[in-house]
Length: 310
Image: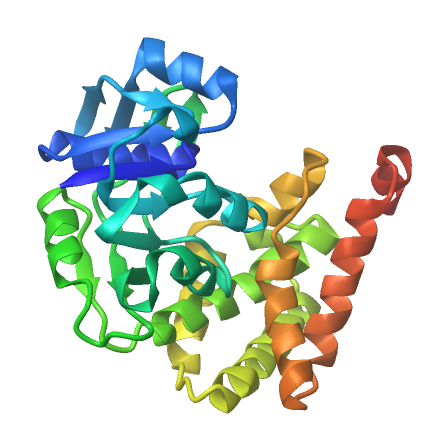
């Protein structure tokens, strides 16, 4: 396929490189000139348990491309989704598919405004992408991708096949909102609590109080999902959390890393989106809502005060 990767961070580099190694024609887009320069000169090297692979990279700003793509994948942070989609509007042809594997809620709806509902795919992935240095990504062969359409039950089969041929272990989901909501629930619990407290995943798992808060958030997210007609597996989410507590003890969540770096966080697209949806449905999410408000508070503090708050 002719594929565009919009957002050339660690996940974009991982997926784009895997797809290119499998013989697809891949073009990377980014807005940061530093990223463009590094990847254009160095390419991308993937390092996993089987060794390393390198690919040269075609990368540019979206406005410099002119021909439509068969598949456009959005890999930006949630707060940049709309601008990212608008930047590639001129590259969307009548048969172009759009795909989001971003964390959080609402991204598929944003893509659908440009691609159309029946050509919009969404999903989740648990592939790790660790940026070891510019252009070098640590990863694993043991991740998965679950994708499908919110509006067209049978959509996504061809893309899932292309992904699997690239070693991305993709499965077409006929009820893709289930894995999306399960990951949102997982991230609402860990990311928000970690971002507020400064705790690593292992730190949360080692605290009885923190684990109780996690359980409360999972229950609140489940209630909102049910009200939306989405039947998530609380057991599945709980197992994923337990696995994270046991095997990713030193891991800092993306929200904590963003807070430490003074960057805007995705709180409004993860826990905040669940809390907002709960309010609109008349479902109280007091624990999650309070944590999201605290997350917004600590990221609004001047750096000196934020350090003291930590």
